[in-house]
Length: 170
Image (cartoon, rainbow, N blue to C red; front, side):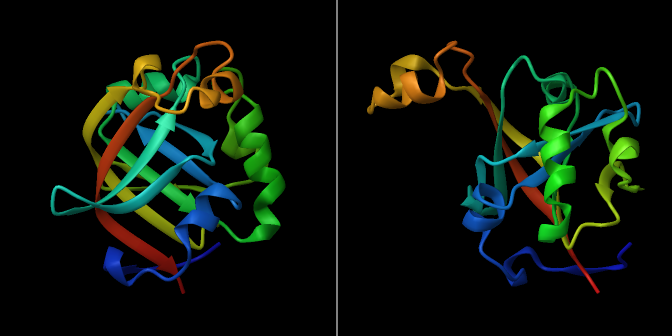
């Protein structure tokens, strides 16, 4: 388990394209009642929008995390070392409706200021929801994406979140 040091989001080290797209992250959403759910994400990003540091993530409506994303404001992205890859794969394949994924994987949830993240992470972004929208078929300029990524027409909901805190393991 790690101890964390708070850092400015703009001072975080690493390549977020690789961290999200190749190494994956855990998106954890906490509802106002304190309950949370986590899922593995491999689509998303980090940047600046509306003069704020932001992260954006995509959640399909059939995912259990979608219910939490709609109800909650507190999002975290937890990034891990490669040795946690199988645990992240498990959290992407198993539903939190059916089991406590963190307990099953041996991950330790940490709760601070309404946010939930994992003690084993190497970096954490804490963010609050700013904007929500649905991906729409009519918005695609490249229609090949539809057949490849949305054969069931189960379009993601996109969440743009302001990064309100960032931390790195010490």
